[in-house]
Structure formats: structure tokens, C-alpha cells
Picture 1 (cartoon, helix red, strand yellow):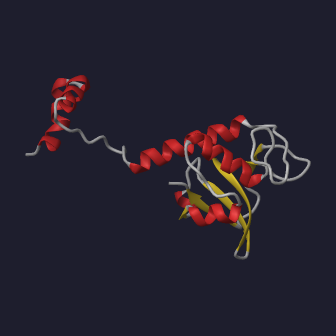
Picture 2: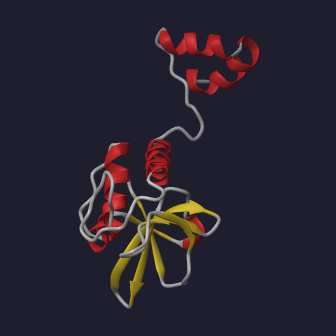
Picture 3: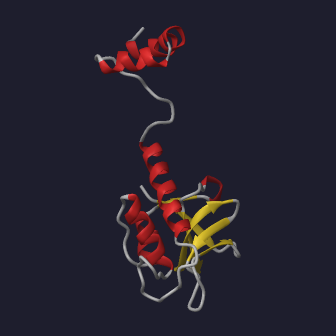
Length: 157
């Protein structure tokens, strides 16, 4: 039995603090679910929080924040504040994400609106069929229900 296989029973007998001590003195622990996926989830959660904090900011074509945004400007700004650079336009952002199915979408994933093969709008998935986005001239950053099935999803890694 390797040290890694013994960790769950050690933790059960000695408690989490002792298992952490074991790791600090040269052992290793595998934490279920903590991997590249966890760091991507943390990134997405932070970006989602940033986008939500911009609620009510006016739409302005070409704007990338911090006070005014267009759709891809909001996603670019939100992920930049979370620590990840994205390209400028919605189509470029789509090309830089890991494409996922609607069934795999999670809060913080990007939602790309398309007509045929052309991406024309992007928002950040907030869960429950809603996105944070900067809709159009005369509108503001807001939470809104996804209004069409013509969407693709992408995960920022």
C-alpha cells in the first residue's frame, strides 16, 4: 500500500490536521476534485463575480471597462480581473475557449450567440439559464435569461 492509498485511513484515524502535517513533512495527499478543473472553476467564479459587480454599467460599442462595456469587452475585463487574458472580440474568444456541450455548462462559462457559423454576442453563464452581459446600445450590463437556442458554450482554461 502506498502512502497515497493510506491517506484516507490516516485522515479518518488522525484527523485532517495530522494529514496536513504528514503532507508538510514529505508525504503527499490527493484532494478529490482539486486539479486543473478546480483552478478553472475558481477562475470562472471570479470572472462571474466581476461581471456581476458591473451591473448597471452602460453599454458602449468597443468599450472594455472599467465603467462602460460592449459584450466582449465585459467578458475580456471580467476574466482579466480574474487573472486570465482573452482576445478582444466574441468570435476570437470563442476560438480560444474549450468548446463544451449545453449539458456540461457551468457558471462562469462563456455563452456565444451565433447565426449560422458566425458568433455575434457573448455573455458569462450565471446558472439557471441566465447570463451576465452587455446587451446593446442604450442598455446596461445585466442578468438576463438566454433567449435563443442558437448558442455555443466555451470554457476558459
